[in-house]
Length: 380
Image (spheres, rainbow, N blue to C red):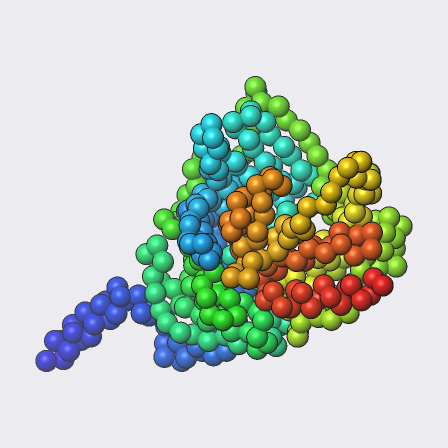
């Protein structure tokens, strides 16, 4: 009888492990610790893996309907390669990117051209998930995180976490985390009223398996043209901004709850520069771009003004897809521009004094408008 009981216990253990509910080393105490709030936040730390490969499927949910696009990914602990096929009248065109410790490559195979950017840090492939991993202490004070389920993505067991903002106006996120590596294998972002806006899923995911030989090697074919460009992104102190940028950036006097200035950066060089002002609450990011507006030309004799148009990126009343007419080179009315079709964000454009100001974020449109209004007052 004792042998039968022992044998039954062994089979039960094997069955539970096969279902992915626990690991052999997971004692009840260990499993309880995983469910504590601090342990859940730890799962959002920097991922730990040796290699990763798969397809990133992005589904965007716009008021006009849902559509998807896919990118392929190969990565190790320090490097990554991504590639995407973009539609073109002459056939799909492939774009390949390499993120390396010393720079960033963009390959354009259809043009037999490679561009190498050096001297700066480009966003990691991890930013595709729109989850920061460097300011979790700030995030804890502005969001709540709780376990809402268990699931499998690409065959990998995941804990499903719900991240809810304490201030209404921020996006809501649902995150499928692979506990052993802390990789987010799926993320969904919802608007403040609970509408699903974007889903990012890593399909066909292979973790810690050998990568194809030379897949991360950016060696350019001999018959291609190579162009090396410097990437200028320099942190700027507000007191030195006028000297470096050629103008003094406008800062909003009103900020959404929990948001703080992360930094002011100068982009570009020589003839003109752009100020990139970044605010964050640990998870959400609000970017403000500013640059001097080009001088206005005098209208020709006999010219009569046409009805004013909404600025590029300004949302229509029914949603966040901008109304941009074909005469301006944009999509037809009611169709979002390409960048919003790939990653939907709210956009506000203002002309303040001699500056063009663009606010971009996933936060509510009301927040962006209020920030822009506070800058309008400061510009007077």
